[in-house]
Length: 67
Image 1 (cartoon, rainbow, N blue to C red):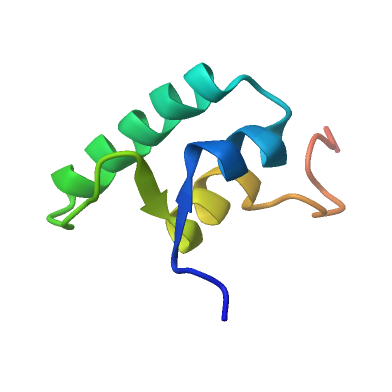
Image 2 (image 1 turned 45 degrees about the vertical axis):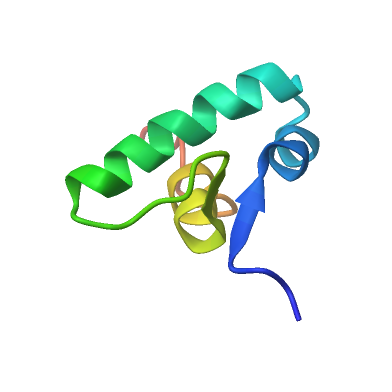
């Protein structure tokens, strides 16, 4: 079963970035979630929230179209 949270190593791999930057991104996403009243875990972020915030709209044919 896939974990409901994602850590810095997996974030870094998914986005092709350094582990240090992945931690920065996790802190940012966790701050957003805390502002919405969610409980967060340091160093991990909800997999669903991560995918929604970073990949929502990916693959849509009208993304970037001007008309």
